[in-house]
Length: 254
Image (cartoon, rainbow, N blue to C red; front, side):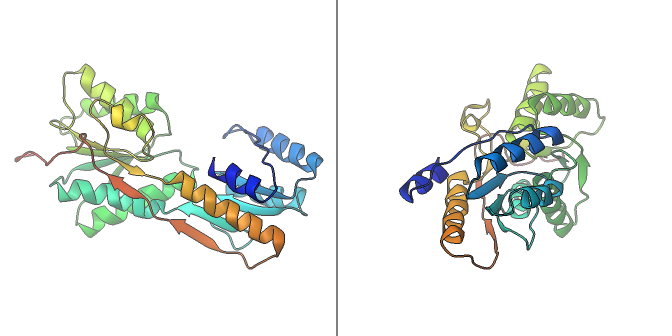
């Protein structure tokens, strides 16, 4: 990865500690493992805000850089601009003439998901449209369940913005099983631009996150802080809308 390359060039090695996203015990085990290794710095990725104070206390001598977590003045923070991403996705659908646009959210406790939802809501309200969100997570199976529930409605949305690409894949699957077509019967936008997204059927319009750029920024800041401590800063990396075949102009009368 970009972080590993940058670290090696500066004479450091990287140790990766995977944790379970919904397991506090897993986070604590990972922190304890790092503490025993006497590491110089830590880059956390998508850890909940509630865990960051524990990380700071347990690894008090280490430089800490935070990625994909709620901003705080205590640490250097590097995030994708998820609010902008939500706006880009929603504005794309609005510009195609869609008015009834549903948003399928990520997990309730996810900072990223909340920011994407906020971007969606701001774009809808700016266009004088009524926002409507359905609670989801990051899984294909939940997207499939939501898709089937949408199919039961007497009046269906003409477009759906899903908080990630996996949700989008599930929705597309549900519609395909009923003989409906994307984007003819429903336009869909995802978020992430997974490597598989161009190969969805149809290929997925989505919001691309530049993880390589994000990783490079985070590692550069880590290396700077290891050399000489600086003031903490927050950087937002702009996402990019990638238009493919899963979105089309709203049909007249819908």
